[in-house]
Amino acid sequence: MPRASRLRSSEAIELVRRGWDRAASFYRPPGAAYHDAFGHTRSEYAAWLDVLRWEVEPHAPVLELGCGSGVPAGEWLAGRFDLTGVDVSKVQVDLARRRLRSSRILHASMTDVAFRPDSFAAVVALYSIIHVPLTAQPRLLKAMYRWLRPGGLFLAVLGEGAYTGVGRNWLGSGASMYWSHADRRTYARWLARIGFVLLRRSFLPEGRAGHALFLARKPFDRSSTPGPAGLRR
Image (cartoon, rainbow, N blue to C red):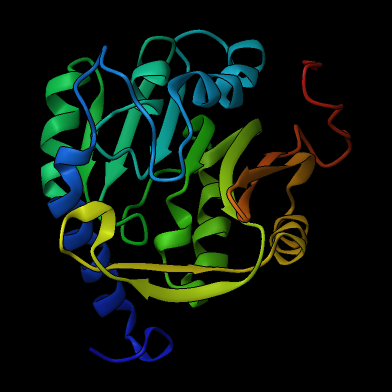
């Protein structure tokens, strides 16, 4: 296998697809004890997502990129909003469709999907954009900005430090997994350049390393300045 830095975009996405297909059994059924690959629990995900409960109208359209099997973020989102989920893994999509029957779940790479401008009140991407080749991420972030309504929120777990690499035996599945992400300052700069207003950035510790949780808003209009998270205009 070529080094991660030499993988073509299509090869990297195929690694991610196969890895999540193979690792589907890692996710336990709804109601069972849950933790993700970095040890985060359902309650931690709920705490990250809780800002949407206060900032987004009930039943508003929300997009989750990298929805996986629908656990745990998809369950939380589907219980409150009109959820559209996207995932590259067919196995994970099949699980999500069974669990989130009232939601629209699409089998596609997030780099290939397209939605109309101003379609969503929020876009959520927890630990998913970091599986997209870094060179494709600015274009993807620009697309998400277009998909958001004015005042819409972007909630994502992105890189704290820069890294591109391939891990073996992902979650004990025997498959490889690909990651690619910039550091938190680069993401903050990209988001600002696109037009987002950064509301919050938090460090999520995970052993000796960690990731960065970003909350940003698409401005309501060119003349308005969004307030801090928790204050609706």
